[in-house]
Image (cartoon, rainbow, N blue to C red; front, side):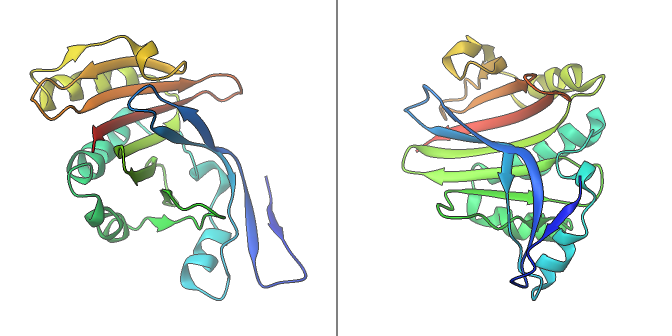
Length: 202
């Protein structure tokens, strides 16, 4: 899919299909903005704009390996849900670039031009959401299960439907923080996508 150039401006708009879909979660009514549909317009006069304009479209929500998928969640979302202000710095240090958003910037979205997953987070009055997203690939679900067991030994399964119609697995962390861990599968259009996410109520 080509990058679209607006000949009337210096802005490029990478056509990013299905990167942000809004789903209303029953978690205190949080709007879980998932990385499945949006079009950003980076300004080519900035370093970010030039880098985003050249990104391989397949790397926006890539087919990440199970290890890369879970590692990104553990490196960014696990610490980031407790300290969201540090997330942009952490992501920049790992070569991620922020995709500019139109209008409401409640949700921030970062991508990198390789096969590591996209990372998105939001901070609202109801809490903090952080998730990583990739195309579905063999071994991801099993690696997520191992990640949950290793990082949250007190976690207990909960009804995925209490999170979202798209939720596949969900766990209550069980450490008194109120955190919820969950995966969401978007299979309505090929290729299917998987998001591994954490929500901490405010």
